Length: 160
Image (cartoon, rainbow, N blue to C red; front, top):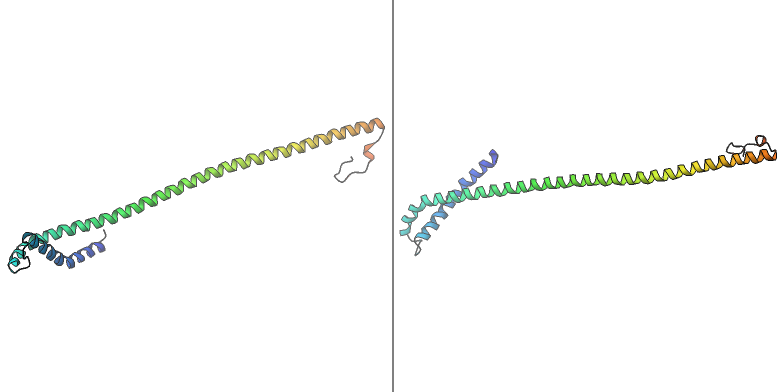
């Protein structure tokens, strides 16, 4: 505990101690002489019990003070443990999220790769079919005696 809290406890004990010692002494006197324990005869007995009352009050005050300190320490530790557990849970959640993101990225990449492969295959098939068609067309044109180079070019730049 810091110095300020330490001085507060001392100040509180200085203010409360006389009342606590009085209460402890009255309780001891009552327990030792039950019949008519508030009579003047019991004043002598009460004065003899003051030292024991002071000791009992001090023991009770120290126990209560330590109990309060331990309780607040335990609450503070519990708060720290919960904060650490929350942070650990967040980190686990982040890691799970990263792993899910990686898996989703792999799946999307796989799907895009398949789609790109299909599209590239189609383009290559189209190009191959066009080459075959052009070769067939030139062959037929030669057989028929038609010169395809004299034809005007089409929009895409080819003659056929």
